[in-house]
Image (cartoon, rainbow, N blue to C red; front, side, top):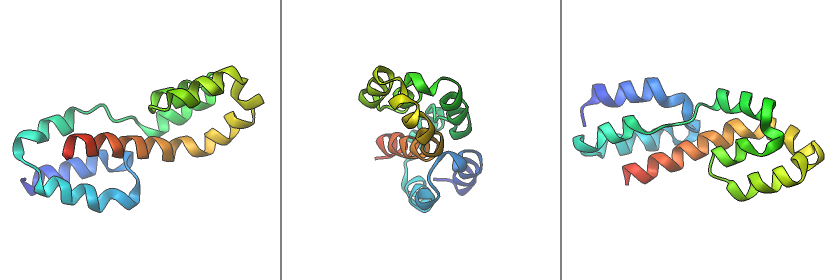
Length: 112
């Protein structure tokens, strides 16, 4: 793929992925067919900062976990009122990394 497109994707979306996976993403983009690039760009990657805000405001309902594909944990969090508040507070520290991992998994689904 064209290096300008790879660099543009990495510059605009790099913060939405785990730092340890950025080299793998760059390698996959380099090997990727040009026809798949629009699909990768159109993917609705979740912003980790927005997910933190959602977690702080309504995370005790499990919405944050459900949005990153962990529906079972989201329902459990809802039924336990955020683990009596403890789980909610723990998620404030974990949700940004979980969101980046979710985005990476979604990227891999398209890139492979």
